[in-house]
Length: 237
Image (cartoon, rainbow, N blue to C red; front, side, top):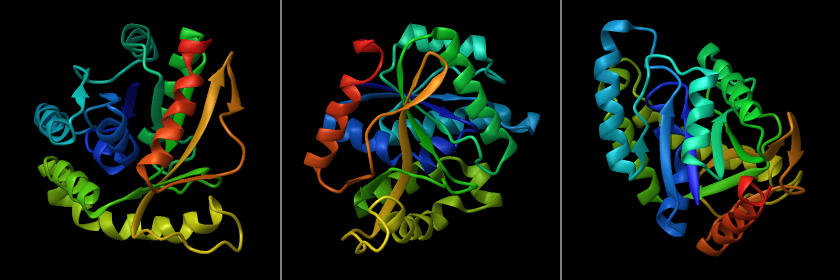
């Protein structure tokens, strides 16, 4: 399996990277990260490029040579060249202008390519209203994500995302228990999780990837989901 993570900024790949990390470790997926931007502060862009390279080494991902600002045409070339089975990108209402722009960028690039694509939408600045996927994180997964986040030293210095990651992922369990597991359902036996929305993009329209919600706890759960992803994207179109 091949996964492309469209990160609005360098550091987003580490914040939302649990699912790609687990797919890499447990299903031998290959994961690339393409930053949509290197941030708006021009003097920091060179450092942010280096920080991204350090973070992806921790995660075992690969960084696509970042442009100062990725265009729809540039991303479409990446999609054609890399041929990912899955594109990860922010959801349309994530509460940061660059995150929302990255969503539009990803959709425009997919529609240019014109092939069916499995899409995993991520959240951070504004929660997904209808997540359909909750992925459990072990303490080891959490520690890996925090180590990767700390590589983004300039960002952590002004706002310690790494220190606050456990609280965010813990609260995701509270939300996901009912938003993904179903209203009135018991909280799942996990301490940390990340929420996503998985669906398909085909011929300029969104289509469901599966019905209901999925909670991924075990390796078996993850492999079943990976098989579903492998059946759905461009390789079968």
